[in-house]
Amino acid sequence: MIDLFREELFHEGQLAVQKLAGEAEIAKMRLPMIENALHPRSIPFIAHQVLAFAGSEDVDGAIWLSLLVGERGFIQIPSIQEINFDLSKVTSNRSDIFFKNIQTNPTVGLLFHEAARRARYRAWGKARQEGEQLSVDITMGYPSCPKHIQRALIELPPDTKSISPEYQNGTTLGKSEKKWITNAHTFFISTQTKKGEIEASHRGGDPGFIEIQENGIIRVPDYLGNSMFSTLGNIYENPKAALLFVDHKKGETLQLSGMAELEFDQNSAADFYKSGETGRFWTFETKQWIRTKSHHKVNTQFIDFSPFNVLSKK
Image (tube, rainbow, N blue to C red):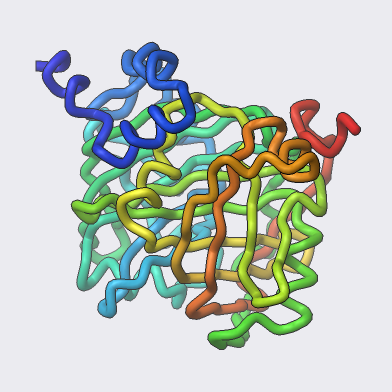
């Protein structure tokens, strides 16, 4: 049963990108990592987290990526097929678009990301909410490459619930939003398969690794990873994507929803260097954005940049 499940793990988009990148054989070696449930060894890691990243789809078909912050213990795992969130312990913005989206489309993609340990775990599933309990029935899960995670300590202060969110939104990025993006060393991305499954992942690098072109298009290098190309494979067959930028010190989030496109064989001297010698990039065109002030409160302390960051090696 599991062997049959694994044979069907990579969809057409992933297989195409693996072939384009010349990494199809490496990708096959990763198949034992993937389960149609949570790996038992992931349970203590997930349950320990105070952050959860969640991708969802709105009524118009646009996808978004959200950050949930909660007291330690707000994530509970009764079995390898289910993750529960105790919403009474959520300390971040409860009016985030995520909670509205899952009322009309239960498909979600989850990422559990702990910067201090350079560790992350992805899971896919269907959400259902009953009162203050949000449950996600898991259909797939696996650990992700930790290479470009910048280490930072993130903990909740005692007064986490005294927040009053303020919103800004638009369709074209302003100067302040562009500055935030181009100075970022970390962001999160959600993509969607042709069949509608949603996933969430992470991207990191030294400040300046994200470019914004004159036409407002965001351009991001694709560094060496685990060779499965889950995110890029999704973009290959479905351009819908969402980006999330988080400023923990200010307690702000910037959510972008739009369209992504792959750029391979970018082998000018500058691009070859910027991409860590992969020659791969992807672009993102913002269609909508939401900026939330007073989204959450945490205490954070930056530790160091990833030694794998490309610009650090110059």
